[in-house]
Length: 392
Image (cartoon, rainbow, N blue to C red; front, side, top):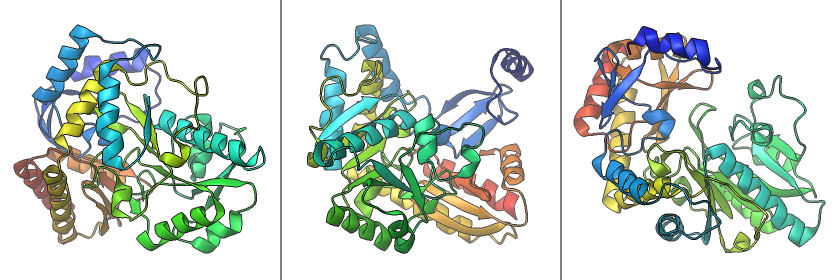
């Protein structure tokens, strides 16, 4: 099918919930994508941080094929090797104690919220269930995770929401303390607020929040749906902040392109959820777990050092562009935000796409860059050159 035919089918049969770019992607290799007309694009989106190993990765594809020919799905009513093997790779590397597997980031955060509230109920009774989150945060699109999200634009039209959340300003302990109370059981943070504009939290603030949680016996919940699984140059971003969460969620890059999510708990919450407390029909799917094992085997210390180096190069080169549109560059690893001024960030995104570079927007004024972690130096350089030419 050509682009016009695909677009017509979409508009005829698919709910129009996405503001799609006027482009149909056909295939890819590495960090390069090709549209239905054969035009090549350097990909700085990775499917919004999902395609950690890029496109047409042979080891990843082979693992999925081999597993599909053996066992595509079995449910969690039985034991199976793939999910157990993935857990054995992921849990120790994260310095955690146990794993729960699901399908998406919102589902992972729902499970993290449920675990925190049950832990508090078990230890303190029913009156400590409130979770503090931050303004400009984003935690998912289910009704509960939307309520946890600290952005009003996502709340309109979907009331009423469940109770049990309060929002504080990021990097402001006084603000957090002002919404604290005897009913609080946890604080939930994104260490880099992705949808809010790629805004990293201050490391001192994060450590202060962790100390406060320890003092008051609150749980520290960290949402690493976007920052986790190597995106910032370590397996999890919290490993660069000097804190260890009680529960951490993950999704996006773990299976390199297949739907997968979950959360890890520390020892404190290891036995909180028991049989029947939580579940997911597709969680730990054998094919997705096999893909996850390939991702985990790829994320060696040397590979992650390369992610950090490429991210430093990307931020330094963009910051040096003499452009009236660039208001600043921020981020960690290959999660980069380019602040935009004097133009709409959506307009510049479209100009970059026309020039052969795919990017996404975040927040009111930020172009977000999330290249596949396997992007080559040559592909990275080509993408930077397109940005230099376009943004000047």
